[in-house]
Structures are given as C-alpha cells and as structure tokens.
Amino acid sequence: MKQIFQIKNTFSLLYFLMSALLLVGIWKVISILTEGEIPSPAATWLIFQEMLSDPFYDYGPNDKGIGLQLWNSVKRVFIGFSLGSLIAIPLGMLMGSNKLAMRLFNPLVQVFRPVSPLAWFPLGLLAFKNAEGATIFIITITSLWSTLINTAFGVSSIPQEYKNVSTAFGFSKWKYIVKIMIPYALPHIITGLRLSIGVAWMVIVAGEMLSGGIGIGFFVWDSWNALSLEKILIAILIIGIVGLLLDKFFNLIQKLTVYEN
Image 1 (cartoon, rainbow, N blue to C red):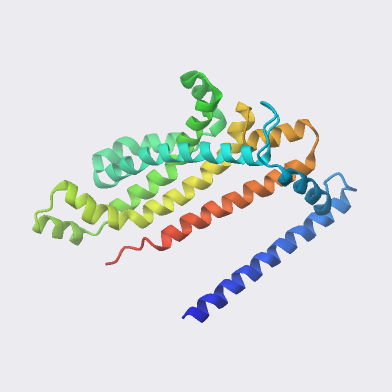
Image 2 (image 1 turned 45 degrees about the vertical axis):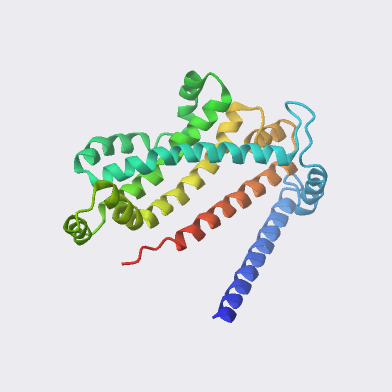
C-alpha cells in the first residue's frame, strides 16, 4: 500500500513538472511571436530573483515587498472568507432543514449570488468609510454563496430514516444537529468552503485594484502603471500558485470528512 502511494505521488509530481514545462514553452513562443512585448520566462525569472532578495521591505505606502503584498491579501481573504462562512453555514443549515426558510431565503440567494464584486464595492465604502473594510466586505458577500448552497443541499438530503432514528431515541434539537445534521452534511459543507475560498481569492485582486494601498491586486495595478510586465506576470503566477495551494488544502480536508453510513 505504501509503495502504491509513493508511485502515485511520483506520477503526480511528474505530471506537474510536465505541465510547468508546457507552460514555459507556450510562454516562450508567445514572447517570440510578440517580439518581446510579452517578457520571456528568462527575463521574468531575473526580476523574480530581485524581488525575492528582499520580499518584506517597506519603503513607504506604495513601495513594499512582494511578501508583504501577498501577506496582506491572504489576511484579507481569510477574514472575509471566515465572516462569510459564519453567515453561510448556519443559514444554509436553517434553509436545508426548514422548508419555510428555504422558500423565504432562496429567492434572495438567487438574486444576489450573481452580482459582481465590483458592484458591491461602493456599498462597502458607504458602510465602512474605508477601503480596507470595503474590500473585506466584498470578499464576505461574494464568497458565502457556494458554502450556503452546498450546506443547504447537504442538510436537505439527510435520509428520512436518520431523522426517524433521532426521533425514536429522543434526540434534542442540539443533539440532532451535532450527531446527525453536521456529520452528514459536513462533506457538502467542505465542498462549499472549497469553492468559496476560490471565489474569495479571485475577488481579492479586483477589490485591491479598486481600494489601492497594499496587496497583490494593488501590486498588479501598480506594476501596470509602472509598465513592468515582468512583475505582472510574476503576480499572476503567485496568485495562481496560492489559489492552487488553497484548493489542495480544502481538497485534503474534504477527503477526510466522508460520512460513514
């Protein structure tokens, strides 16, 4: 079994390296076709090495290292994501377990779920009077829907016999929630969280472009204003890699939360 696991990991690493080489090859071809307007992988790598030499420097409001930029973005994402989850999970459990709540809240979910994060930003500014609060607000409001919908679906799909058993044993509402509802719906909740963290990480870039100050989104916009395409490409790769790591983390949790019938 251990040998099979090692072989699987080896093949996963091999496919990842092949994908990376394919990306570099396509990137190189595009650089040649655009006659260097799109920086080559080699030129971008040189700039990246310079950025890594001191990633946490702080020379003022608009001159900070990539490490500080990334840390501030990750911090905002987790604050907004956590707040969204605290709203989505209880509300999803209520909607999934109560038909009246589903009929009452589901139309609102379907109306607000497709709204662009950029549309929420002015309301965030009005409510919180600062860009930091507005950015966290749009992450919260746009990331909660996937968790809410998946939680409601998981709770609503609990088999009737499980409910009958809880009634037969005289479970209180709290014991039913802890012993039946949450364990059964947990894989669906984790799936929702996995989708939500992806949304939150995408939204942060747009939010920081609008809010300015500090963050990976602001770094992209600032690099564009400075006509540094190398830094933009580096930021795109960093955003993608961090998003991949977040997805892998929740995928691992998802595999560990399979409800045993």
